Image (cartoon, rainbow, N blue to C red):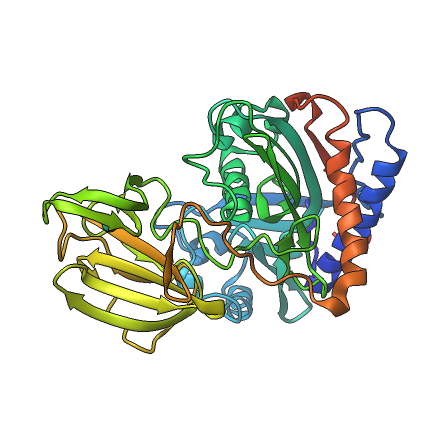
Length: 440
Ligand SMILES: [Zn+2]
C-alpha cells in the first residue's frame, strides 16, 4: 500500500476554494429536501511500479543513522543525510518520527525512496538517483470541506456543538476551534457567557482544510447566524481579494466587528455595579452618581482597551487610583480606573489597538475591593456602556459592493438551506468537496 504525498501550493488551495464554492452552490441549488448529497473524494488511478513499503517509527535514543544502517551502506547514508540537512538537522529528529522506506518489489539493492515526516503538515521525500539522492519538502495532502450545522442551544454553544451527533466526525479539539471561531465572529454582538439562554439557536457553514488523517489544518466560518433571545445576528465572510484577509459583515454589509468591545475585561467576570445617576458611595458615605460600570475581578486580571485609540491620560489619582483614558475616533473616550498597575509599554501618546492589554485590575484610589471601573464618554459626557448601541466598524467599501452582493448571496444560500424546517441538529451535514485528482 503506498500513500503518495503531493504538493499543494497556496495557489492551488485558493483555486480549490473557488471551485469548491461554485460546487457548493450547485449542490445547494440541486438539493432536494433537507438531505444533501455527500460527494466522495476521487483518488487518482495511475499505473505504478510495484513496490514494497516499510514504515519505521524512531524509538527512544534511536537516531536516523541507526535506522538507515538497516538498509544503506555508509556512502549512501552520507549522501542521503546531506540532502536531508537542507530541510532539517538530522540530529534533532525526535522519537516517534515516522520514516517510510520504499523499494522496488523484489529488488534488494537498496531503497528507491525515503520519507521523513517532520510534522503533521510537512514531509521530506528523498529519492535515490544513480549516484546521489534528491530531496523535496512536501506538504501533507489536504482536502477542503464544509461543515453545515444548525441546532438549538440548551446551555451553551460549546455543549450544543458537542451534543450534535452529526458533528461526531469532527474531533473534539477541532470542535473546540469551531466554537472559538464562532465566538470570535459574534463577540461584538453577543456576550456568550451572560446572554446565551436556553432556546437560542445557531446555524453555520464552516469551511476547513482537512488532512488525510481527518484533522483540521485551517478553517473559518463562511456564514453564520445566531439567534439570541429572539434577536438574529448574521455574519457573512467577505474576502474581496480571496487572499484570506477577509472580515465579517451583516446582511446589510455593515461590519460585525464593533468599534468597541462589549467589555474591557474577559466576559466571565461579574458586573458588580452598573451605571446610575445616583447611588450611596460606601467610602464617601454619601449619595453620588456612578457614571460607569464596575467589573469585580481578581487583582492582576488583564484590562483591555475596548477600541482603537490614543492614550490621553495615564496617572494615579486619589479617587480613580491608577487610571488610563483613551481617545477614540468620532468623539469617544474610554476610561479605566482603580488598576493595580499599567502595562509597562503604555505611556501618554501610545497608540492602542482594540484588545490591547493596558493594565491590570486592582483597588487603587477609592475602592473597597479589586474591580475595574469602566466609563465611556461621548464628546465629554458620560454614556452607559451597557445601554448604548455600540457603533460598528467600517462598512463594505463602495468599490467592492458588487463583489459583496455576489459573495453574500451565496453565503446566505448556505444558511437558508439549513432553515428549511424547525431548527434541529438533524440538519447538520458535512459536505466533502473532491479535490482535483491530478493535484493531491
Ligand atoms: Zn465604579
